[in-house]
Length: 347
Image (tube, rainbow, N blue to C red; front, top):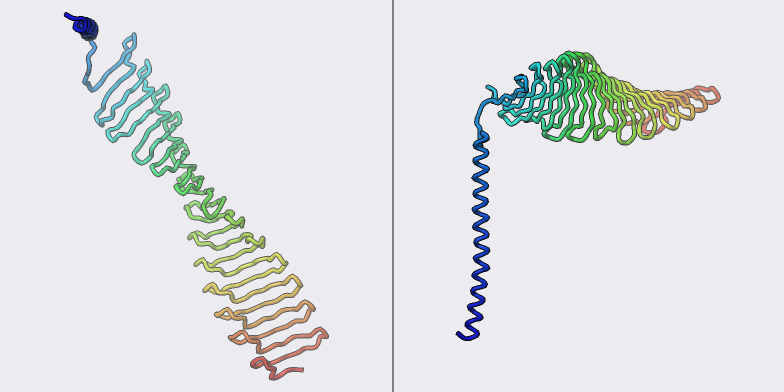
């Protein structure tokens, strides 16, 4: 054997010894692991621990033999864990319905529910609270559309207060009477910033007030049919106004005070057309206008700023045809006019 063959044989021998040691170590660890697993399995078996247990009910008892906890599936397929006191009163229930509703209920020492948390089909998370008599008093949750709500109930289980945020992000608060009908609501809508609404005992809208986005405050009053009968407010030019409506909701009378000091009273017919206007201008002139059904002024009478009384009659086109009055010298005058030409005058 030459030197090269000797070196090759020496390397092979070393590698064989190294690999043999690695393999033997693996085999030894594997054998030890299997032995440990067998020992653990034997220990679990001897301790009565099983991989799976199937049952309809489990009951836990305390040192005195009192049943303190139940894990059951009842006849309605509600799977629940129930914790009870030493006197047998239910204190806590945790479970799920067959439709997937998860529920947690907490009870008082008498076993009456006081608080529950759940996730229902139409409401995602839900929190409910009862009083000591077991009456529902408060409920809050978030619906599937993302709108959060809070309800408060009286001792007769009627909703008395409701608050939440609508799906258009408008916050709303509603108060109800003892019959559950709305009496008052407050909200912030998209076109009206703050809004206050009041209802009668029949649940009909009777009064509404608010402030619009342009800053104009408004107040509306409605009849028993919910029709607007009176509206008042301050326009965006800061001039106050008031309008009265008939039973069909058409304007009948209006009053306003302009910023320049002019006061106006308007009256409308059953079709909602203006037929009469009275006004006092900021220069002291008082006037009365009467209109036809086409909204043309047909008669005008008043007292000018120099205290001259005047009466004018107009044709259907609004042209003056008759003019009479008393001038500043207290002399009367009378004019008949045709096509803007005076055809007769007195004196």
